[in-house]
Length: 328
Ligand code: F6P
Image (tube, rainbow, N blue to C red; front, top):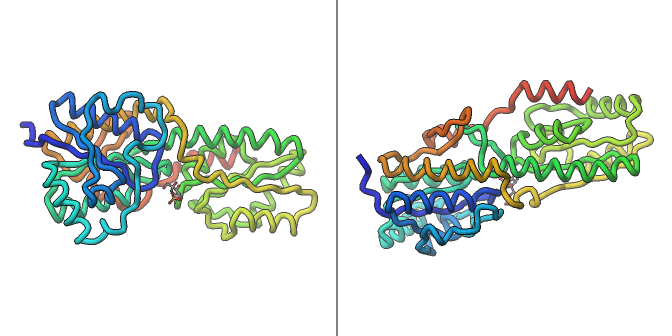
């Protein structure tokens, strides 16, 4: 039996990621398909508290599937972490006759939605939008595939100049506390070493690996460093350490930063976004709430928020072994 939901809100929250616009487009069009009104909520939970809303229809989201970023803007809201802030948000939703919302964001955004649901019994659904791919319950978060391709392209470009000048490059990539981005781009970019939080390589092993690369005749090297890596040194300190302790290295550092969050979403992310938006809307209107939409073995799935927000998705150990072999 279709649940009596007549108007659904959609918002983007937390760090943005490529594919968020494609997901907004899918939620809006899935609502239109089911004759349900859709309200865009600007600036994440901050805009929900402010009642910063806009009516959206199938035409409002034309021409955005290929655009990075989010037309609804995103934000992190301290006020929403308070019961007063969430109460203001609830009042705004009720004033606008919004019956449910879809939040596109990371685990922090889902935690907020879960608490909101508990406090107001308000139907909510989550779409995992983050480049980190660190959320339990989905093999891919939205933006991860695009970020991988962006970073691999950057590594290929850096490798051109590294080999021209026989240099060692430390390249820092995003991923917050997990090493999914670093591990995959390290393998794809042919990095000589990959430093990730899940495996404490240790400085000695890094030095020994670099020495081995040099001895094998490699005139330039790339070391990919996940920003959450625990070796205890920043990429700049790693450079200093090599400068001071290793002969014959001309070392440079490249911190890729927020360019990893931008760009036109890949085909994979556009299709994933389209599938997740439909799944989120159709789950809400059939009475489900408090779930994150995910993809597992290419099948759309739902994971309860209280599981999705617990812990981080684990590194693929087989991939780690492949990386160890490839960096011989
Ligand atoms: O969660 C996505 C992410 O890009 C992380 O990889 C990164 O550590 C963080 O956001 C950066 O946060 P901000 O956008 O606040 O600088």
